[in-house]
Image 1 (cartoon, rainbow, N blue to C red):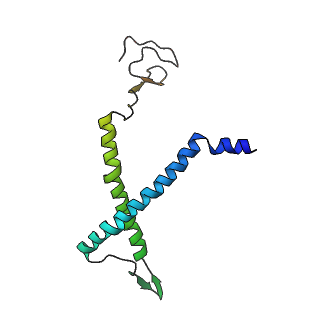
Image 2 (cartoon, rainbow, N blue to C red):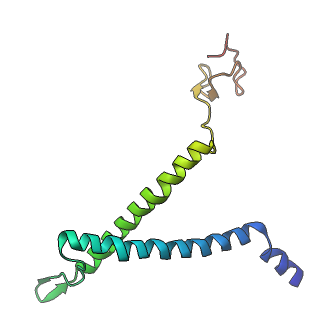
Image 3 (cartoon, rainbow, N blue to C red):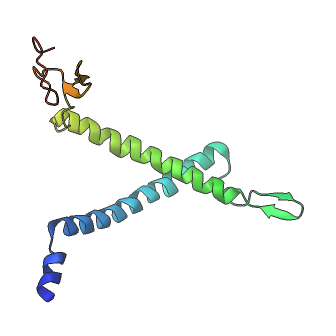
Length: 136
């Protein structure tokens, strides 16, 4: 049983997953610090209110605190924007420059006889074996 457990623990994809979780947690701390310490004060300087958690309204004696929800939505949007503009866009540009973006699948079209999707360059349909005069 110990040998099986050791084999399970040392499997490559499990180790890769553990590394990804640790790096993800560290990266989350960096992004949260960027949003909390730089972007939120910038928004507060522009709009004059850094914390919306006290915003509320009353209906029939019930108090609805919508400010905390607004804070959470605003934080989510800011984090998503930071990730998109400072991580996704630069990585995509780097991958494009390095030529590591996977190639797209070749264009396909339906076979005129059986309507099976086949590559444009095909000379014979793999489903119904219809021959084409030349590659399209």
